[in-house]
Length: 284
Image: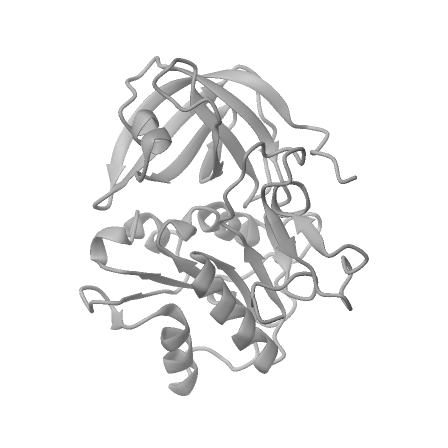
């Protein structure tokens, strides 16, 4: 049975700061009691307050940015758990489990450009992903800024969280909103197709995507149609984060590398999956 990563720990943490982001988001800065080595982008942690104001089950959040034992999490305030975290004050004690899951593949600069498709709060795992690709990881050739194209979509401008921080990374950034309040009017795949039509983005790209389930279904279908390499970071709800509860199944592709079992666990075998391994398309 797939097990949680060997570096995962249950530990105490302390809230350093909370700053608002966008119309309904916050960025939490948290200090963990155990020093964290540099972590791969798109890994995640389970977080809860260490008091009765948080639900008993912690919530999963992608690591947004890291500075040693100080970790940042970009959080959309939606329900009781995220509200309790967002309303915390500096010094609030937290219970933290992580680092969990697997991150993005190594983003090497020796092939087709990487197009990063983010939907709303699905932007969280991309900041460090871009940073690490520009530096070069695991001996891979570093990417030039023009090889990393960030496409960010949301319902409206207020859900394009921390857009200026992504723009400051120096890679091409394009936005779209469903109501037309910022950038192209429409969704990220329409934006990608527009940019390819005008020649701003080549036809042959490698795709990374994180966002709502319907968006990921559409991205997977697009990648299959166009025979593109594609990785999805799933926003699947999780109960435990460590592979015990079986609450986050993802259908595998029978002919793929995980096809010996009908489902993979998003928490320990993901949250990042190649579309060769799993499918989001329910008709499958």
